[in-house]
Image 1 (cartoon, one colour):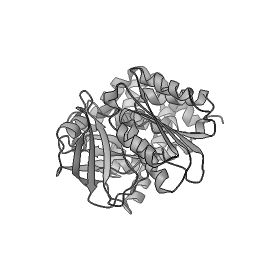
Image 2: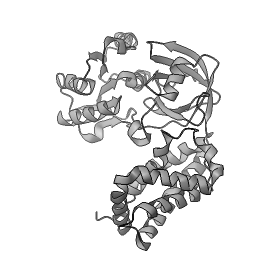
Image 3: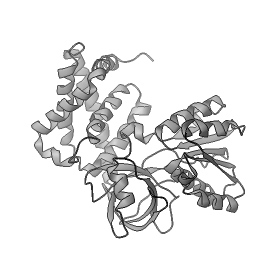
Image 4: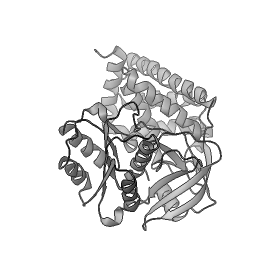
Length: 373
């Protein structure tokens, strides 16, 4: 399809501001906070991680204005997810004014009445989809859940398995993730995958690795204890099992990316399916195979499950290479979870060995909202 006139104008603006994105971001937030200082309290005290996220999300949405199949689900997730920040319909014009002001300041070559009108129309569409999604979600779900830590299992010096009890029923699918806020860093949220399928007791588990300068991850691994109360956002993610097919499942999990893979295995078992499930679990060292015993125990219980640990420094290359040494996989659905580099190399490798792109499932959380920390 030929791009719409608005899409052409928007992409010209995006191309122009790309080299000065940092300046655009700084000016955008300056406009928001100086014009409406009351909204500053909705953001973290330190903006070093958060600062890119809001504007990046808006620009990503604008770039896909001609592709509703991508745009609408993306915006609906943002709209419902932003409820946990306290976002109200009245906040959207504030952000829109700052967006137009920042673009007009830095897109000096492509900006004009036509470009501004295109951006106003686009932002109006974006904001209305988000507002409607939030309003619909409000009728059935809270903006966030309080969740008490009931166990904290330190598996290695920097990896913990944390189990929490939500204060209200929490409905999710195996393979999804949520956002977590700790009491030590208010308004700083990070994403973690559920490490099990939904449980009868309602408990939720996460695998958390403390990363350098990671505020939330270090707080969870080194400070969280039973009795502490976290906040959870709504579930998200599409890396889930299609129970309408009996295709085999090829699963790649790197590091704590094995958590949602473990949930997928439990989901298949609970549905009574006997489809082949092949799991490649990678880490840079044996130390990183912190959940190997659990996975091997599942393998002993389920004859349809095969687990292959892979160890090596170049994990993003070695894990996909290990897959290529087995197979064939052309009749399998693939699932990938782990660091961004592993996801990228894994997707490329899976396409090369014949798995169609539409049967490769992953949630590149870091690329959508910034790296977990």
